[in-house]
Image (cartoon, rainbow, N blue to C red; front, side, top):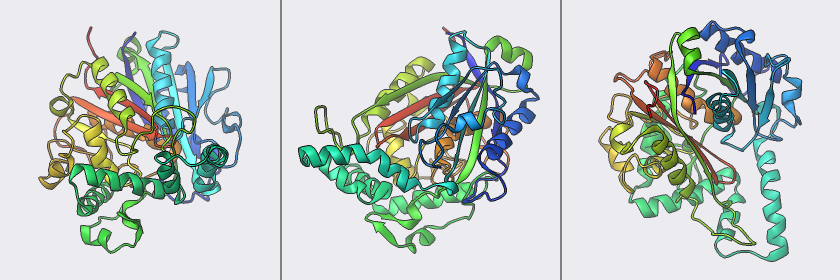
Length: 410
């Protein structure tokens, strides 16, 4: 396997609730063009394109066909991937494997969502429907049924069920969720590409109404329009064409049964346990040569549609012991200038163009490593190793990418 680096990132100029000024493919082209500007490459330098967004969310089937010219994919290999919320990172991992395998030298990964042209909850309902039909046919599972009941409240209903379990087992309090929300929204205020950019206090969060205990309105992510693009290249190409690079040193992904329950066979898991996160991160760390992530990882960008999930993922990704994340939060370790800056960008919690959200995590890590962050959320310390994380499906898909300032050896 060849070493592969991220050599350029492109974002749409803004991530907002509704882009009335552009259609889907025009929005995609904004991020593609930004990636070319930031690398000084041209479409002729790209060997292949990977592409992804959430299925059915915009009501457009096979949008990659419409986007061929805007993705600069004419006469090139071009593949679409959709894995739920993990789509963006799955698209980037596919680009990585294209290059690491030797099939191509330079690949562009495109991820996007234009939620204003569809309805996320309708899209999610279509995903849950097979489980609901199975429940009607076979009866409610006593364990999986709890997850299904949570899904009755949409993604927030299921996340509330997850948050309750996490608080119970970790020793954290609802106030820690408030505090995490305040931290990440304040980070987002420094990020020119964040959707929600208002500095937020704990009191501001606590003034928002409950949706489903322990989650408040102030604990939830927005729905955003936007796109993220990453260009990856082989090590020999990096030396010839790149001005800066962040190396993809480890990748991992794993899957469990749906949070709604498996009614035929399999193991029902607590959606707060997130076993796939432990498995995927262990694979990525091993590949990157990381033996003690709690000591060797310098920053984390995690997929957190809800504020409690940042604390949960810190523990499941091995960045601290179980029940310690809220302690780290209390002592300031998760701040931009702390020992483990966490979601310095503001995270998915502050910007959520779903198909792009998981790619934005390693994109932010890469920009931090390359010292190319725009705005005020550049982490002061040198970043040697960073971990990024994606999460999707019905609480069941996890992707992890470990990035470094140097390529892996051996």
